[in-house]
Image 1 (cartoon, rainbow, N blue to C red):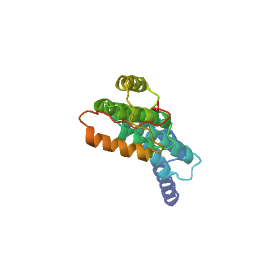
Image 2 (image 1 turned 45 degrees about the vertical axis):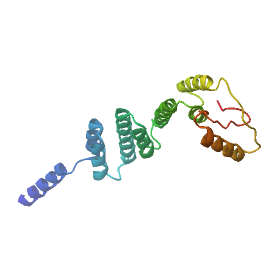
Image 3 (image 1 turned 30 degrees about the horizontal axis):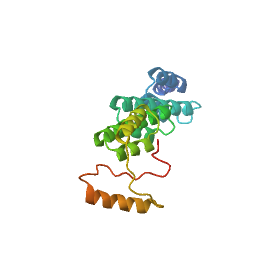
Length: 186
């Protein structure tokens, strides 16, 4: 009898020490945290809910990465989100915000420069967006009156003359611009 009682107690102790996959899943699901789902996977790697646990871990990591990017709200933060979560649910938003920040930075640089080539370069890279109309207006102010000093068959020839003119007449020629035959891109 003592032996049977000892076996029963040992079995009961073993059952209590071992957790059931069902109870562990409910616990992980209730906590809904990365560590809780990771513990479930460690304890029950072959459970039918293992893939679901991995999916929830990925979703939680994606949300955390997105929250971090939004808090920082810098180009580098959105680049990091896009690099670490290439299949995340916020990829499109991340790309849009990254482009918006880069466009705003490029616009500030073009405004600071204030010259036609900087504005044209900005418009070539960002032909649409809130700053594009402002860039076109600024460019129109700067380029309302022009004097064409030459016409060439190649960009190389035009660039060479532009450099010579800037070198010799920079005190009177404020901006020497090489314009493509189709005109400035806008």
